[in-house]
Length: 170
Image (cartoon, rainbow, N blue to C red; front, side, top):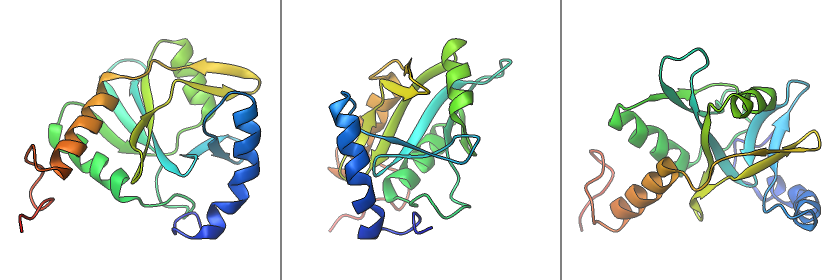
C-alpha cells in the first residue's frame, strides 16, 4: 500500500466510512488490518496506547511499527517517541498491537489511555473504540495525553526547552 506516504489517494477512500461513523456518533475511525485486527492508524493520525504491561513489570507506550509500509512516519509520531524516550519513565515500544489485545487490556483495567497524533491535531484523546458491536471505553483525556500536548506546544512556541536539536532560534 501507500499508507507510508502522504498522498491524497490515501485520504479520499476514507471519507465515506468516516461519514458513516459520524452518523453513529463517532468522530474518527480506527483502521485495522488483517484477520488479527492489527491496529494501524486512527483517522489520518498515528495512534498510541498507554498500557500497564500484562503480568506487571511497568507501563508501556505502544504505537504500531512502520515496517509494513501502511503507516505514515509522521513528524508528530517521531516527536512523541523521542520525547517519551527522553523522559525514561516507561517503555516506548513500536510493535504490532491488535484490537483483541486492547479489549483484553481494557477488561483487565490495564488500558490507561489512548490518543491519536498528527500535525494538525498534535494529540487528540480517544475515549471509546467500537469493536465487534461493543464500545471499549478508554479513560480520556489522560494525564499523558495532556502532557504531550502541553510539552509539544511549549517546545513549538519556545516556552520550554525541547530535546537537543529540535529548535533553532533565528
